[in-house]
Image 1 (cartoon, rainbow, N blue to C red):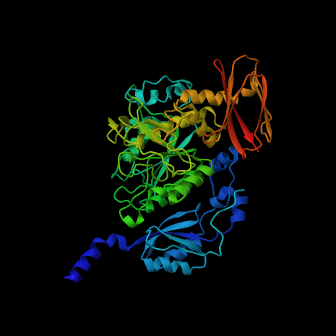
Image 2 (cartoon, rainbow, N blue to C red):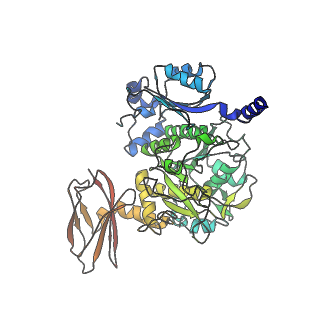
Image 3 (tube, rainbow, N blue to C red):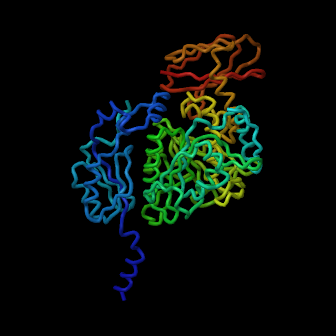
Length: 535
């Protein structure tokens, strides 16, 4: 009887006998040569984007050593499922003994098991795996999408012909059936803005063949969908790559690795924005589960990958998650990462949607960043029908598309600058909380912020020097009004606040760390914004 129970237990746990792990390598080959000739490892558009925004090309951009990959593949009972050049790692699956045997390979630095009950392996004598960083105007009829676009005032950008043209968005999701044939994406295809795609789960470029989930099709529609007089997405003229990274039939850490692989592919293709309506905290094997305290932006593989993507100059937008009314409650990875722009959900009246995952003190920065309509969002399904769906899965791409339209208006701005403009435009910027973050963004106001900063040196206000090391000098028109001066960092945290009336003033910024800051000066009749760099 005991034998039968043991046998049945083994059968029921068969999926867990194979373990998942990340295998990190100690080095890469031909790093110096690759960095001297980046065109061999990146596309020209990726190189141009990095140059425009002063993003360095470094060792993380060099591919994983193919010899190392081949060596791992030859080990019995080991299957390689994904690779990451940024992490210099492979995601493998196999028996515990087989995975541990990989540590005998001298180029393997660390093995991290997804199962929290299994001890990780590491060589303490080797350095940590961190590399040194060296048209015509259109007046759209939005139809069903009217409320979700009006809420964030993205229509004001579209009227100015900022519709995402020239901005490349990569969509990470679970399936994109019928995108290649649907009438609602005909405009996208006709304008040759549907660039390409790849299914990382099935390892095929036939991105539209998988029909097990239409989630990605619906997500894409919030940005790129167009049905004349009936529906317009928030970035109808942006260009799109579609990547399947989510295996909807299972929940396994391999999906984190697929996501990071896709981010690396997006970076090499010169993508400006990644939008991802995915999140990870629990898995089919409970031993792989994360704890709420591990939603700290640095623990999970996917969040570390998302952080690198943001460091590479990509603006990463991710849904907060739909756990707000569950015991879990808080955002999931990679929405917890510092560099990720996290979007929660409100209803059609702008009130908090109870399912929207909340921020917490586990995250290193304010989460969520902003919110948009995610309860009763209008989307286009795989049958070309306009339907209602709920979830931060839809509020996130609604915002991502609006960001693309904003970025078109100021293409030389960095991702960090764009994120800050959006935060500053939001409804509760001065009083953020864990439910709505900085609030509902106003993209018309964000556009005004970008233009006021861009044109500041031409008006009667003068701020100098810029960049600044010690004292920032201000010369403003004379006034008897009280003025409030505030300085914010790129994450929206208020650093300095003071009152004054004089036409001339100065601010001691010597204690600030190096970086980009935003100066806001307000009175009853005027408002002034200026961006400066502290070095």
